[in-house]
Image 1 (cartoon, helix red, strand yellow):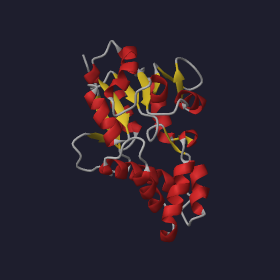
Image 2: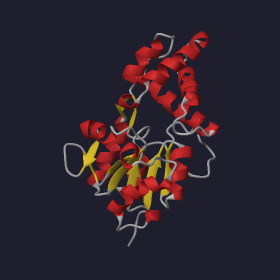
Image 3: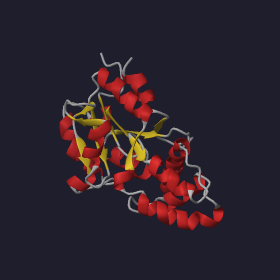
Image 4: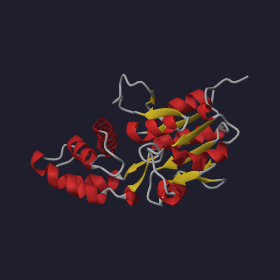
Length: 230
């Protein structure tokens, strides 16, 4: 008898498994009066993503994110524009590498319960190698086992185009799409695309920035692990 809603889970990478590295961005923005703490920069990412979604910004447009980010870490008002420009040049694909600890431990719980998992991410060709260092890999290995890791640069299609999921779903062919959860951190990229692909979208919203939204939200991957490992 089915006791859970989902047979498998697919994750976005940025904002769900990893963040732009605050150990790089913290000192960068501290020069402009910004708070250099990891917690401040973690908060800034989700405020940036909220602002990006509210503005309907496309995947390649990050100006709204950058402004929300530097303002969130309390960069001096006179330095906001310069700090935004510096952040934009520094927050590139190689800096999306800071592992979200509670996400990593939740993956361990899900793996221990035998939940099939994968990753589908808009990226720049680096995501599989980066995740393999500290989070997960395809097949057995040092970290958490995934069935597939899809990088948009590699497959040639990116969210919000829902066909990016076609590159992953063949690895979950035994399951109905509606019983596969997709967890992301962007309303415009992740919620919309995964819903259009027939998956069950879930927003990782650790600070309750999207209260009242008409889609499912969780504050941590442990919320999902609690459901799927009981």
